[in-house]
Image (cartoon, each protein chain N blue to C red):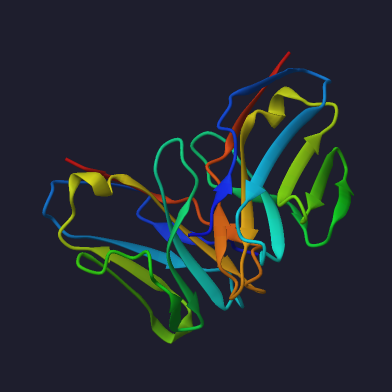
Length: 110
Length: 113
């Protein structure tokens, strides 16, 4: 079974700090990697996608991928209380199968 | 542009009763997904459609769950009979590329008493 692992948290950071969220996956054949944000009581929304090794930056968000280590991370710079949510890592396998991790709950304290 | 539409938003039923959920994906999105999400957990795939063909339904409990996607657009997910353990949020999502860039509906929250 394809697995995607995340620390459930909560991860608590002060406002303005960098939040670092991590994810590991089991299938070496995985091709595409995504981060979704889910506010309490709401549905997931896509915030980042990354397809090749290295870093991808979008505003305050940076996704990092290391396929050799089977590791994906999301950095949130200048964290804001509005960033408080659950962050879901998702991995796409062969045949466009998408598997989600259990999510990490982030709390940004003012 | 309208997003993914799901109904009903909330449903409370007694065990052994049937229930159905409906989903209308974003126009032009050929891939449609049904996920189940329990509290505090990530979404779990139930079934994935490419147009009207179910291409991944290995996690769908076929003894009680069924799904269809007529004409490759709207989809219905049915549970009959419902069990207490089916209480969860049922999420519908659609994608144009099928690569993992999903757009989710607001979900249908099922409570089985």
